[in-house]
Length: 456
Picture 1 (cartoon, rainbow, N blue to C red):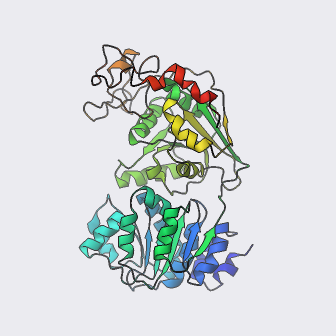
Picture 2: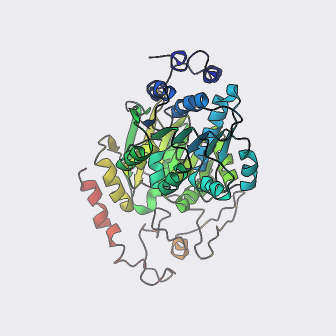
Picture 3: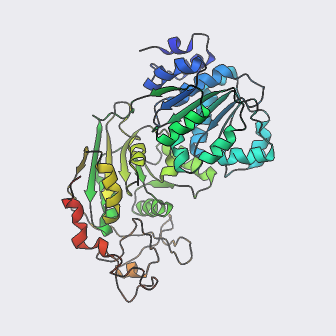
């Protein structure tokens, strides 16, 4: 294995930053890509979150960019949080060359960004806000000599690829382009073929140690999903915990009910203002709170150290998303555990995942006491109903409340009735026929047993 001195050279200002950070040995992606990047070649690299890719493309940025010559480096990212994270890293890596790095994304004042763009050497931004600046003529990309597209696969997932290609058209053809993606799909390869010149393809093994990673699933009744989650959190020995949900509504439901029951948890999703999202991530990074409940979009690309457990409260729709989620744990030689909690509505998604992953073992559901739901969203007003305690949470005292509530998400939330099924109670206020027994018969007890008999 080569040293950083061999990869970067003794006179490289980036090497000083590496020594300041006390990095000892390069990661696989750094060892493979830095020599190619330092030669000025285009790169398409398969690298997951936490692989050390930021330092890899920083080697090209620090080498190519001179201070006070306008925007010469551009990094495109799919999310605001990732833009902030990369900006912090690049600011540190480029400090001995005194380069100005600026994060540009939506949800915050564009006026302040316009002022700071006048002095920026490197811009890290989301496609939408970069286009806003281009339309206002507040950013000039004509001097860009280094372009980085990070999390390219996620750009496709989020529908940003047309924006990305439009932004590329503003950059000079003579430039060094680096594309990093956790998975190299056909779409990513096509994008690389269109905008990269004779790229060198590099791949790195996941930093997740499969010998240290345990994956399992529980198959439970609809009304027990949250109760099992709470039971496992309270009884599993853990460090930091990440809980993934497919919707903002479920993120709020899980996080607020955990808070109501004495478990310190914080939610993060795209519905929060950027300032609030930044503050939440600072709290979680500092381990002031040990449970983060998140959507994939909000947590995508973030490098969070010390995560021992990943819970899939909702099963992701694709295997790629599943891989991204489980990549948060079992890093750097530490043990990690992934727990999937299934009900009938998760079977289809889980079938896609388990068919290619025989390492996910079924666990017998322990005896658990059904948790009392203390927080629920009222659909009627679109506002959160809050009641007692400092956390402003509403307590539903008995099972009849389930018939009166307006929370009718098709994704996993509170149980629909005392039996865990949609009820035909006269007290139900749902639209006529919406939750009839005929429409929900796929969740019947007879059909719910099919999953346990199905062979994957």
